Length: 180
Image (cartoon, rainbow, N blue to C red; front, side):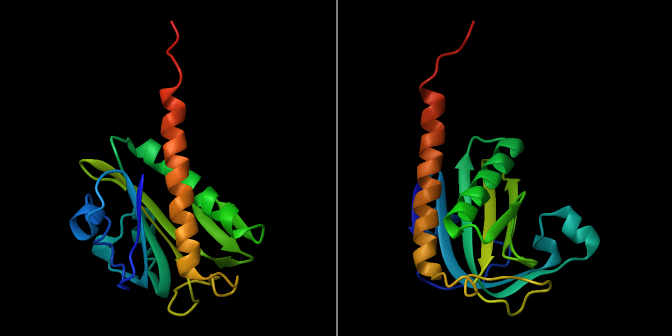
């Protein structure tokens, strides 16, 4: 899995959750995970989670650490399973203060993350983001600042960890023979 830390800061508005975003914009082709810092404000027409839409929930934050994962040839259940694995991995990297509930991360009562998995016609896509600061969020949140975590350094750890996990996951499937 290829990785890219994007030094340019820009807001996430949901339009980035599409096939070949990393390749079109940053030359990162194939299975990949990219990351950057920016605000988050997703208009209703870009919200993928119908449960959020039905509830009238807004998804926003003034400064977040964003990640987009793209994997090719996956089903939606496999992409959701990868999303859960990624969030477990991120939780492990952050330490015992962080509690994972499905694909969400919390510190005490504050929501630390947002996350969604979906499909494009050619790939499985995951967007997840961690609050860097608590400002601009519509719900009670926690943030990397509260945990004294540097976003850039942490992003590098996540990029390498998720890439390694993906490579090992594929390798595990390539070393076994089928049963008769």
